Amino acid sequence: MVRTAVRTVTLNVYHVGDECVNRYIASAPHTNYFSNLVSFFRNQCMDLNRLVSETLKNPGPDSTSAIIAAVDEIEDNLYYFSDVISAGIPDVGRLITDSILMLLIFPILLPSLRLLDVNDMQSGVVTSLYLLCCILRIVKIKDLANTIVMALFYPLEALTTFSRGKVNGYISDRSFTSVSQEPDNDNIAKCNAECLTVNVPNPSSSPSE
Image (cartoon, rainbow, N blue to C red):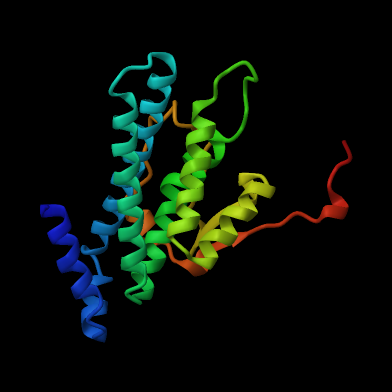
């Protein structure tokens, strides 16, 4: 109830439409709230994967209800992200979408789609596909969808982040089961939509198999 009340109040503020209010919301240290919110969302996604993995190994009477509750929380957060972005504050929208890419999709979800062992249950693959579908279905941002689709067809190394002419990205091969280091939220807060570029290799120059 408290969380719902806070979100209602904040959304009312975000939809005021005043330029001074927008600058205040999109300035430091207030932007840390959105980065921390995406970090919290990432942890929820990892908790969901653990629930699914444990349920596959040791099914229990409460497993289904726990997974459903976790899914509801994740979708609720995604709808909140969508509502915040729809408020029309460009810097906040870019911060949220970039944070989702750099904190969750690039380092965790996409690498988890790589099948390393055909004999493994690969519950992380199923969870990653579900989360990607949820993000695309609820957070309807064209640039976000285009980047995810591009990343599915090209190696993650082709997706690089540049800030002020220097590489300032966070891409790794970590999956749900191996997370030991977290990116700097300050760097994520400084990133904007213009700095995200996709280096598409020339198909004619690709090596033959």
